[in-house]
Length: 331
Ligand code: NCD
Picture: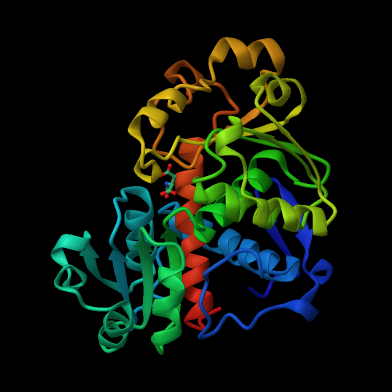
């Protein structure tokens, strides 16, 4: 990262603008939450991700992590996140070992997360882990001597998704400051919006939080928004988002977190974003979704220029390359 200026989407950001004072030391560190990242940390990740974009985009090859092994421990369903981590590692010349599903691991035999961590640290240089229990990834991180990256801990957080979301907004909109961003759907159980809120609180954005009352953003997240003096409104009405936001971030109702499936049925089609609605309000709106979508965005939205959800996927590889390289001390 030698250049004085670097390229983020269509806009240059000056390296000296970074607030390096508050930066975390990534090397050997864990990525568990976005709530403790400073603006300088986020800028560092964005800068590294921008540098890795040609590799993520298959334009360039790299052997930066040639001697490194990633353990991908995925105890909850995943398509994108696991493949994205694995792709990031493989395209940087590294190797991957993987566990998929609780039932195929020793956790099913009753092994503790502590023991799992103490075992896997012997095999790999870095762990990316997903697990249904909030706090579980931190438990592994506390026990393991190698860096651990949270790939989603239940309804807790999903920091790497949120970082790729911020990277995407910057690329799509050139800048984040001054934007109104709406998050729509299951804000209670959706872990990506928790992590994304913490990140967006470092930018001068306004937030519109759209959800049914029972699926509102948790207080621990809105408390941080208040503390950081972020202007936000909470509403049940998606019309507010369509009227005022430049970015709409739609989310899936998290079926797997509901104890009462009848309740899930009540909310699952609460918000459906259609092409007609978007064109009526603002055809240039940026539309995002962490995916998988299960009906929240109708398919005729896909070829609108602002439909960014598949571009998010590509950006995610670059962001995960950046995180892997940072925690392994290679950038
Ligand atoms: C999200 C997740 O797992 O939290 N998916 C993802 O990682 N891209 C969103 C979801 O499952 O709804």
